Length: 249
Length: 286
Image (cartoon, rainbow over all chains, first blue to last red; front, side, top):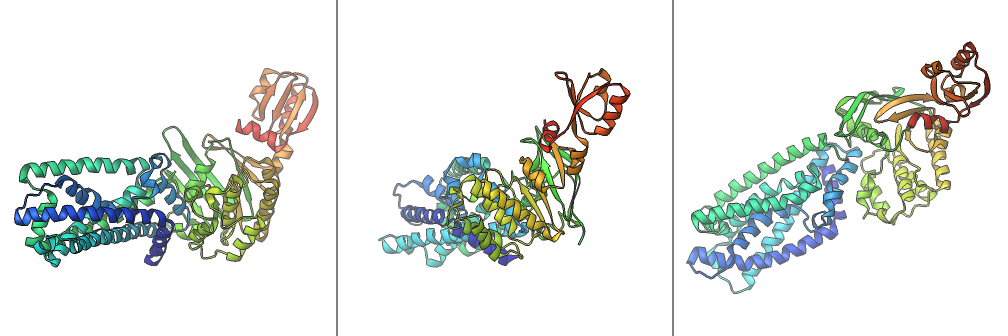
């Protein structure tokens, strides 16, 4: 089964190479911008240096955008509102469902695509951040050890896995309308969470995670990864059930 | 192998403004079954339910004597299907589309694909989205023929296809049936295809099978009869399909019984004409 799922996932990447390349480029740029914000944030957390910066933007990048690394988000279905009408992902699945492919293979292939996309884009995003931090005269790596930085990445990767794990379900288990509505609803929820956190602890969420990554980084990273992996498994089960029971046209 | 290749019993699918079924439907080996009906009568929905692209609410579907739900993959490996689902991959070339599909059919015949692509003059390097409507249909038809299937489910395979290719499709369908242990379900609006290919015809009306016709029965029993007068009682006759007064004429699906009735009523028959399949379908589909 896994061999077939990997074959299908590989095909998907081959067919989506243009969108995937654009997604990689956008992620690179995002990584560059994030590195500078992250450095200022670490200075604020660890040496109380109060350089003004947009912590809301930094929080939104980590809370809102890193989970979207689970999708080829610069591909046509995401960029075009025509998807609301055309329901591209559902139609793709309609063709695949008409072929002799077991539902478990279909859902596994979607999860593999999600995992590979998330892994590659996260590697690029955090890799660029690290390169910038190393290349430019910044204090981040003086304030956090490499291991603490890896813990910080793992915490956010686990979070992205937990939230992004639902992306295959949204793509193939719902409609084009839901696909385009979800980011708006998510951003509203994220902003609400951020505002609540700001009003209680007067710190940004990334700042808090930076602090805890230094204090209890490995434990938190393990916990986050376990939650992320469990969520992905759960979303895969839900997707399998949904694919078996839904109407595609 | 079971001679009953497809058996559908009590199949229903409810939508807000439309319902399909209940449908009972059987296809035996060696048969070409035509499925006709007006646009929106449920032909495509029926096929899609059979391919599990749409889920039925109730009913039993068996292919080759096996339940569809528990043997879905194995069953689909033995079905060739044309159902207009490829458009979403319009950015792929025909070759790339074939590479996506063939992997899932253990019996996919690559030589046959090459042969058919040549026969239908398909440019495999062309993007599917750039193909004309007729070429898209031909591509789908070719894909349906490439696995060694037992059953073809063809949803209007010749719609928009040029005359020469239509003839080739008919030839290939007849060749497909050579073995005698295969079957085809053909949804079409083309009466010539029904005439030349189909053994029996199911008429789908508002989601239900309203009539099942045997081609020979049509030629023997369906007639238009010009009569001296049309009494009120004739309208209640079970075999009268239609009447009109200028000139007085009736359409029947059982000429013998109507002739007896007219004789008893002392009505003169001026002229009788057998109806063509096209005329019969017009009455049934309207």
